[in-house]
Image (cartoon, rainbow, N blue to C red):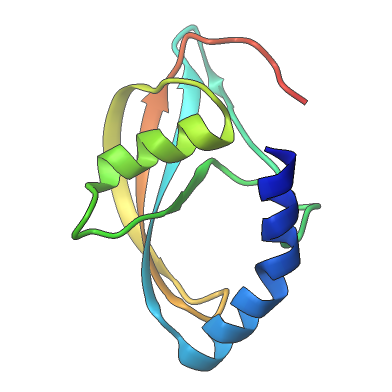
Length: 119
């Protein structure tokens, strides 16, 4: 996993430049994850690439023709956090051009009963 994180860290400036010049249309899925007994707590992550000081909710990109947004949301959470999501429900969607690309993001809410912490 450390190798993949290092690769993302190294290519991030090139990706950002490409997005700002070409403005590609992309799609993403993000998940607000809570625990059923402690719903006021939300799981946040920090990426090892880009601005590593920012906290965010888990998620990432997908291709609508190859994968459903729900499946992408579950996959991204498993890749980034290593937990399974229960009761996944679509909350809404939003558009973002903050990184230079034209990104449509589907926002989900899900729960987990897992309580283990990772560093």
